Figure 1 (cartoon, rainbow, N blue to C red):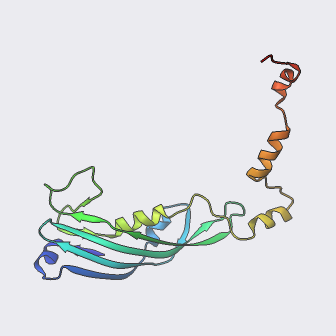
Figure 2: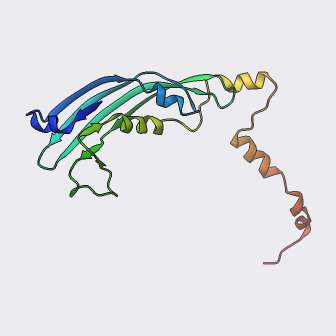
Figure 3: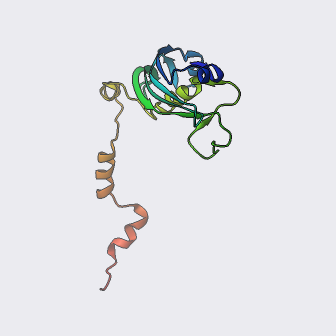
Length: 171
């Protein structure tokens, strides 16, 4: 997923079709949350505009990653899919550091870091495998849900405020 800008500009093709399987397993090894990552299927199209010196991509990224269950630490296969539209420019006058555009330094456009960034954003904060709550309860561990905690909190008075129960306020 690397292109040479000078070759793209010289060709008469203004659209490029993309359909590749990319292996990010080395990058995934550096992230402790990801236990494994399947090859990622990247499809889409790129539109080259010589007048504005930009390349706009419309990409669909599909794959699956293996993460640890938050309750049992067992493996959970988590499928992901994302649509992204990164915009690259090689015109220094047009590029603004605060914009969402990527500036191409040199003559090569490398798309893999942008795809990896999106994969990284797809990692959920927490994954629970199917049946994990029942498995935990079989071991004798009680899981308190927010509803149970809220119900218990309504009926219980904080002991520090029990002194105030006898006070009567005048309106």
